Structures are given as C-alpha cells and as structure tokens.
Amino acid sequence: MILTDDRWRDLLHVRATNPGAIRQAYATRRRRSKLLSDQGTLFLVAADHPARGALGVGEDPLAMADRRTLLERLLVALANPAVDGFLGTPDVVEELLLLGALHDKVVFGSMNRGGLAGADWEIDDRFTGYDARTLVDCGLDGGKMLLRLVDSDPGTVPTLQACADAVTELAAYGLVAMVEPLPYRRSDGKLVLQQDPVSLARAVTVASGLGVTSAHTWLKLPPTDSAAVLGATTLPVVVLGGVPSGDPAADLASWGRTLRHDVVRGLVVGRTLLYPPGGDVGAAVEAAAKVLEAAK
Image 1 (cartoon, rainbow, N blue to C red):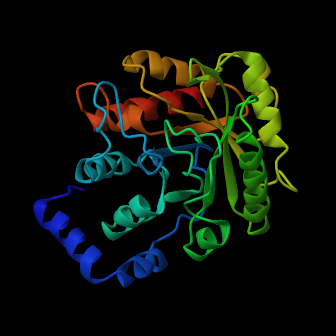
Image 2 (spheres, rainbow, N blue to C red):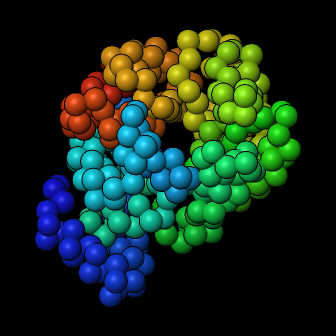
C-alpha cells in the first residue's frame, strides 16, 4: 500500500471537510477475531512517540515530525502479514483508518502521553489520549500506558494511581491493559533508564499488582537476558524496541534472546523498525518477524 500524492491529498481533504468519516472508519473496520497469531505470538508496530514530543531518531531531531513520511513507513510495515497490528495515539490511528490500513489488524490505543519528553513534569504522565470507554466504543483491542518509576520524583505517585485506575477500567470491559513499567533515576538533571535486574524485576512486580485484577494485564518490557526479571511474573510480556542502538543486528539479537523466555509473547517496536539505518523499512520489519518466528 503506497501513499501516493492523490491519496495524500484525499486524506487532507477528508480531514478538512468530513470529520464524521473518522467515526465511520472506526465503525467499519474489519476486526481480527483473536488477539494472538496462529503461532501464539503478537507483533505490533508502534508510533505513539510524537504525541509525547519525542520526535528524534539518531542524529535527526525531527525524524518523526514529518507526518507523511511517518505514514508511508507505517504503511510499509503494516503490509507485512507477519505484523499483527498497530499501537498509536488517536491521531495516527485515525489516519491509518482513513487510509484503510488497519483492517484485520489488532489495534492498541495509547492512553497517557502527558509526560512530555524533557519537560520538568515528565514523570507525572497524565492520561491525554484514549480512555477505556472510548477504546470500547471504537472497537479497539486494548490500551497501552507508560509507567516510569522514579523514586525521587513525586510525579510517580499520580502516574501509578492513574495506571492502576486504567487497568481496572480496561479489565471491566475485557480489554487488554498493556503496561510499560520502566525504572529511571535522575543523573545531572536527565532521566536514565535502569536496566539492571534488580530495578527491572522491581518494576515488573509493581506493574503486575496494579488495579483490582491482573486478568487482562500484559507487560511491555525492555529486552533483557535476566531470568530474574522475566521470572518475576506470569503475565504475558512483549518486548519493546526502545531507542534504536544504531546496530540493527545487535538489536535483533537482543530481542531474540528475550523472546525465547516462556512468558514472552512478542514484539512491540517503533522507531527501530520505522527508521532503520539505510531506510529500508520493509527489510527491517521482515528481519524482526524472522527473529520472532525463530524464537517461538
């Protein structure tokens, strides 16, 4: 599926003249009957970074700012039959719906994007995207929330409470709550992700206990070789792509090692696949699909 000049102009025209087309696109989307693939895995492409003001990839601080380019790359990724679906904020989900790219795909809505990248209040991550009721009304499959844990930052507390409430609400509707718990500390005013087993295992156990039930909770975790981290939960886990390392082979190897653990079900990757070195999105997505297939 290619985003030609005509299709791009049509999208802009609909945006300006027919906002009701979005509701219609939600209502007529062909939904997939089950969450997991026939192999029991889940492979999602993510693009919820722009709504948090995180636009940079590598040396380009505005890589994700060009919406047409982002959509073109997403169309390439979603065209691969191994990609089960998409995770994004309402604006990008709706653009893909209008382009007809989300039929027979799993779709997760991103819920909290208020912790703007680099802001003083970044850890107080307010829910500014989808809410649980809207996810149900729109026929989506679940909601994703980011939970950055910083013991020295009181903004962690309202974020914890909001995520717990969202887990409870999503479970009441029978939708998946995909929680991304990431332990951070501040160093010289900057947030630094803690990837040691102790910090990650603690984050896993905190996220697992959110809400009145964990029946519909999934965890989205960084790749790790630690059995202690992945052994800290029975909840289904998906591996997040994270910030591209600049070495695709190393990223793939890291994902592959994590995917072999019994609780890990799949991948949710954004910038690493959408903006690979050399720009070949199709090849990057295919390589990730092969790693997932080999591990399971």
